[in-house]
Length: 285
Image 1 (tube, helix red, strand yellow):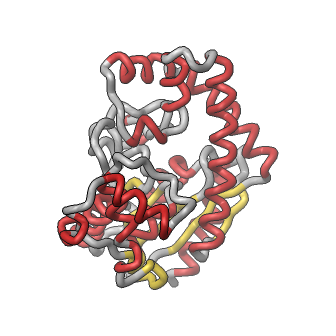
Image 2 (cartoon, rainbow, N blue to C red):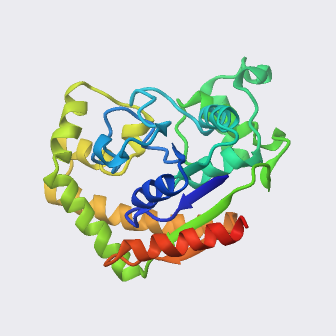
């Protein structure tokens, strides 16, 4: 059985994944695009060894933060795990919808080395072609792999509309006011737990790449260390972007997947866990 736990940032997905793994003697597989990176711990709210409670976790801390890791890379790794662990109960947890879709749906990618027709083109020529087809594409002219991937989109044989792995989709939710308050408090807690030191260590090592340039909490503090933002401005921006990200997550999951949503009882999380377990058991009876 595959159980998918989704929802916006800060809603309790990690805690739910542990409870479900204990209940069903399962393993946990990460579906968060930032938690695959090593050394990005506090800012990604990555699960700690203590929180794992001895449960096997996969696809956490597998990539250096300066390395490129794509959805295609994730799909290959997660499907290998799904095949290797057939017969086991698997909890796939995270807020990156495209990772989940790539894992469980017929979402296909073309290998970059199949794109020989683009080998003779400069980055600028590739960039211009992308902009002609996708005027709103947010992409840098020097990101050649991503430029080629954009041009290969129309050649993808499948767009991920058909589910190829059976799974139960569980979504955790709460009202917007509560969620935003939790996000703001979580950012404050990250700073208390040493987020500034974590990012400074990366900054001092001149670590850069997609993870740093796009990761909320990292890109803002890099700007702080560059002298472009004050610390308070960086902190406020982290909160604001985290809230906006949560809103986008809701939109994505509601439009792309058939999610069974559960209102989280933050005063007694066990009540939410029990409701989810009853639903899963009924769904699989």
